[in-house]
Image (cartoon, rainbow, N blue to C red):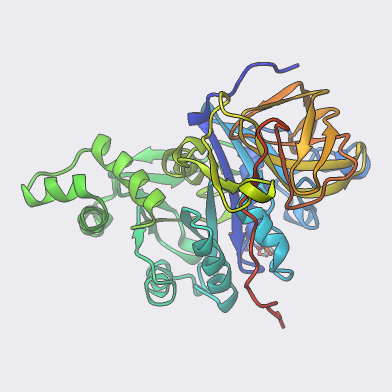
Length: 416
Ligand code: GDP
């Protein structure tokens, strides 16, 4: 049973958000596939069939049944929080957004920014969720990368910053140019099996576009980041080692948003997307502190804060209570500070009640892993809570806090 603390700098708590049909589900599934999980379709349904990723029809109808799924990529732990469906946009989505540190916004390369993408974007704005964009369906007839990027600047009040350029589009979508490293990734025949691309020099035919794209990236970054601006003003060309952290700073500050592209259902572009998730989206350490207030009458007006550290008093927010087919009632929570251990008593500061933590689970897409402790920054499912519901805070009884309550000013959005 896992007992060690996670290195918080390597944790990514992310959501994947999209307009219906843009490819949120497909992208999530492909991420789980590429992160090396032997993802079993049957586990939840009949305990048998391993998913055959080559057959598109078989992949339909699968949903990630867990409110948070943990996976690993390149020495990082990625918790993918299910940001629920496009249609019931309201409280459920807001609750999920509340516990994310970052998100991937998926767009349809042909449709670009659709009305619903705008709504999701504004919700994420409200919670200050740092984002990277993935323009999916580059294989579709009518797919246009630049048009999508233009729509983002026009409709989303944001500064999109392409860090890739597609090589071709529609049935001729052959790969992407990495504008940071100035290399070309060309999809190979093994893509469906897991080897995604060959890295080659940028083809002569695309060199001018690539140079222009790189210059534009540096220019956008200079506007978004002081360090790059200084180099820019001195006429110095920033190195990859300077560009990567600058993109990360800009992403976290929201001053510019990295844009990538691919074709999720053909497994193209998913690996570079994973690399971007670990390189650019924030870790729990990038949140300086979570804010709350006291519980007693005399402290209700007092603002309290908890840093993302195991040394702090424990605080956690429940974001989903679910009925798991195997485990029964499973309460998903994000720990913001301190540590929770199996069997310990915690205090529900909203209800003013003590609760006991039963088993603690990390949910993977194909298995659940019982662990005996969970620390600041992490997301797990726990059993044993009798009287705690979504949105409530669990904390140390000796140091009570009510984490900032979520407000739901958003009107109910009707989707036709
Ligand atoms: P969601 O509603 O955002 O979760 O979207 P889905 O992942 O369910 O995808 C919606 C539809 O688009 C499905 O029929 C997918 O097979 C299809 N789709 C997903 N990714 C791609 C892609 O890269 N290219 C094309 N042409 N279709 C895709």
